[in-house]
Amino acid sequence: MTKGSPMALLLSFSIPLFIGNLFQQLYSMVDTIVVGRFVGVDALAAVGSTSGFSFMVVGFAQGLTAGFAVIVSQRYGAKDEEAMRKAYAMSILCSALFSVVIALLFGLLSMPLLRLINTPENIIADANAYISIIYFGIGTAIFYNLFSSILRAVGDSRSPVIFLLISSALNVVLDLFFVIVIPLGCSGVAIATIIAQGISAVISYIYIKRKFPVFRIGREDWKLDKALCLRLVRIGIPGAVQFSVCALGVIIVQGAINGFGSNTVAAYSVGGKIENLVTQFFPAVGMGISTFAGQNLGAGNLERIRKGFRTSFVIMVAGAAVAFAVIRTFAVPFSYIFMDPGTTDPAIIEQAVIYADTISWFFIPLGLIFIFRTGSQGLGSGLIPMISSILELGFRAIAAFTLPLALGYMGICLSSPAAWCAAGFALPFCYLSLMRRIERRSRIQL
Image (cartoon, rainbow, N blue to C red; front, side, top):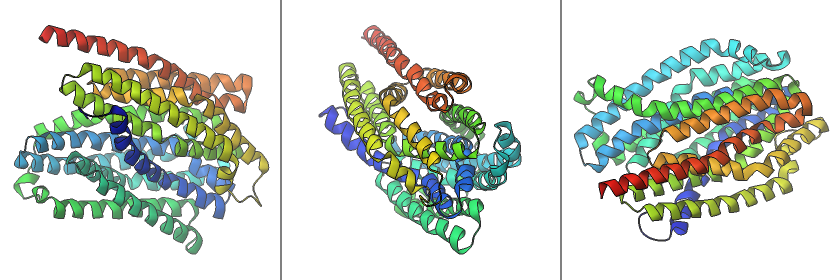
């Protein structure tokens, strides 16, 4: 990314990531569609009410394993095969440990956590059944993300997308099997998700072993290296915590929504799925500018970094316009995908569309978050992303428990946009300050 058109480079990097992100959303979307269509609105609300907790543990897994892969990537670049294999083995051991800890901790606390956010009584049993299975099966998500991160670390970005497509297709088939053929309801879609992720993780592991002989781990590689494990954890934890902080904000908003009853929970869940679908381009562009900024920082091309950020802003605004148009045109038919129009209360559809329409006006500040938060990471800053996450959490919490008092459901709809604006409009100034510091260091070194 140090040569050529920034526009062409960023688009060619971001579009495949965008496609992968869309399929990543299929997991939770298919679960919601199947239970909403074949079980009922209460089941849809039950699954939807757990989205924050699910995001917390799955996001933690993504951030953690991406950090583990950094060491593998560095040693791959240094062509140190023995050290790379050792890092791979210790990553697997650390992933196994975190799988057990997370499963036990969150699995045992699932019901108390659901009660903490006032989950409606008519859906709490189904919500607990669903999220408990997700917690106890979290190892499948951790290992799938680990193997995908390892593949990307050695330059293979295509295979993780293929494995994701396989997993998504399996998830659809298994969802229908465990809900229609074996009527297990919310538990069925959770079981389907775990099985699909587990199969994808196994396929990924076998592929890595066969495609990359360097990763064929021997007995010596499995010998515990405490110093290396600590280094892996130190790199992985900050990214994992950042996801968890964002998820905590989602959980706080969910607690406020739960006070409106299960129908509103169902409507908000559907609106959230629509939001997730149309905004997946933003994190893809964020990853693009992060890679662009990191490579050009290493090459000392500071002016090219600035040009890259300006270009990514233009791309983001265009993406925000497309996302806005999609929501304004298709929010109603999208909502009916999740529910049976013949039996669903029209008020639920109306509330889902109100949420989608409301947040569509705030996609630019959301895009700013992904560009400047992720881009700052590419420039080597861990502080700016952490501060912005905490700022977003604080404003989301304040908005969730103040705006509904004056505006009712509309106040809930404005909670996330309030957080986006607070973080999104502050981050460009943080980026400018960071660039000035980098330029000063560059002049001193010269």
